[in-house]
Image (tube, rainbow, N blue to C red; front, side, top):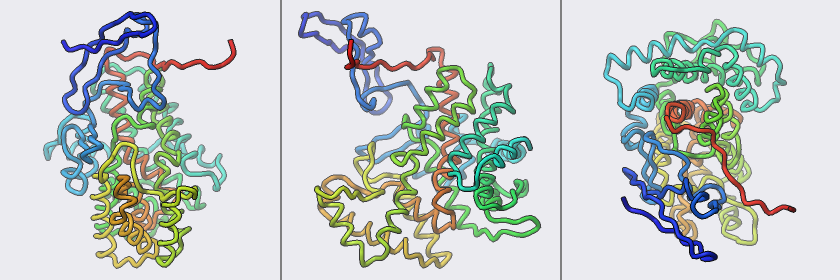
Length: 418
């Protein structure tokens, strides 16, 4: 086995640590005995150089701009496979056959309905509350109605639990939106598919109909797929950390929701639209681009660059095509999309952005696409939650079922008084 040798220059004491091979990406060396051997811990601010777990779910190559779910490139899934097929892939490590998908899809329809008692939670919030605060609380409350999931012992129980949360989150998100608007809540429609049903619950009124175009369903389905999982990001790490304590799986998902809420994470697409609104018109774009390039100006252009991707975000490419298709088929003439197109045009050709690998990311396109779908800014991150729930719960299962699972407890470098 290959090893890495670490030498403590203070004492000349040395220790060897095994290198563990990865099937793709960087290999790692196991430092679990570092303190025992040398009396040291590593210091890795933000854990950007630390592998916190072993996983076979999602792989990202940021330099190449690649994203894989269970070995499938994202380009082969988003817009080509239905979101529920991707959910099946994440949970079962394979795409479903026609009969498997039919059974999975029908089971998910039945599981859309939460216990009626959940509705009381929404009534306790002011209608001015941010939807993420309400949605997080509602998901956490699900653990009180499904306490049987606290002690799962079989793969079948894992899958049943996962299907239940994936199916119910869109209903809770729709309830959250309608509460914020003061509208009556709409029950799920069993005759509608996963994505169409969610749009129906957002738009319909009791006894009325909701106009939903197929291109809208396809666009939102692609958004859910593109958000389904993204390796060990902040919210996924939060889910895994809570999982390691033995807490209820839905409590872990609620933790993921809270982590995703941050503007540096899932809330970024909301910030993109707010900035496009701030720019105001195509004529103002050049002025704001100049501000973004001025090192003495605190202004930052939202929706460009990514902590992981040092190339074009592969999810952004899919969304750009979907946004253009939506715009063409529905004849949308949006000022925000015009501004976004101008910002994109300049950023992709300007040496300042190209040299720094500041390519448009998924947040840049998802914000304008969701706006075209007539979804308000406050609901952008809950949309992200719906898509990411499948990844979170799959990561939870992987963490929980791992024989090496133990409570996650990072160390620190103490610099206080002693």
